[in-house]
Amino acid sequence: MVAHADWSALRESETARILAACTRCGRCAEVCPMMPYAEGAAGVSAATLVEGVLEVLSGGEGGAGARGWISVCTRSGVCNAACPEAVNPRLMLRLAKWRANETGVLPKRDASEAMARVKAFARLGFSEREQEEWL
Ligand code: SF4
Image (cartoon, rainbow, N blue to C red; front, side):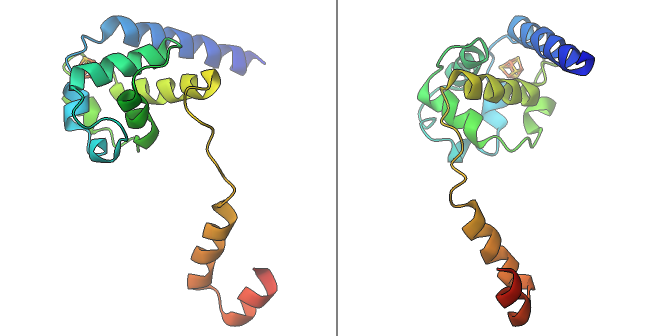
């Protein structure tokens, strides 16, 4: 119980810190290696993408590009090294994703295909007998 309360307080204080510290310079978006895979982000300025992420973090919808960026973040941390304000944009995106899942602006992950993928990978390492028994 205490841990949950601590986590919620930490999350809220980090959210407030990030919203206040970020200057919307866009460096984190410019250097992100996942940006080419972010749906809706092509042609959107880095500053606008960051503004959208902060909007999602605040409980809003953000733009499609910002949501696309949040969705594809793999936590590389390249953004953290580029941020001149020590905002921790990796955490910014992570917290924005949590908020987006809560507010429903990002669709919940569809896990219906997950088992088929697990089986496909398992076949690579299992003998035929093991596959018959376990898959
Ligand atoms: S998180 Fe850092 S790099 Fe990204 S826009 Fe804000 S200040 Fe700039």
